[in-house]
Length: 94
Image 1 (cartoon, rainbow, N blue to C red):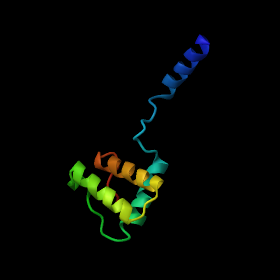
Image 2 (cartoon, rainbow, N blue to C red):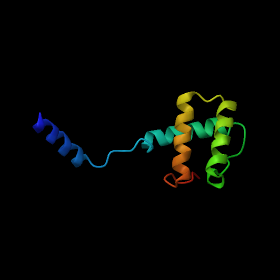
Image 3 (tube, rainbow, N blue to C red):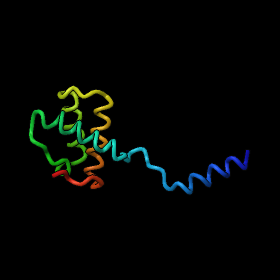
């Protein structure tokens, strides 16, 4: 049993740092952008998320999530995508 655990641990170390729960894959990033374009741009211009404080942005996200009738998974993905953007880990799309 110890040998199996040792091998698993070594294998994980070799693979590298695992993605954290808040990091998006390339596929998730593309899907988040798709939700952003489809649900947000449908009714208004794009607002720069970085210009809002965290509390203000959270209130707008709560309000607009309901108004745009986002499904739970869409809401979660959109918030993760915009959090990544706000943190500077996703460049601004041209």
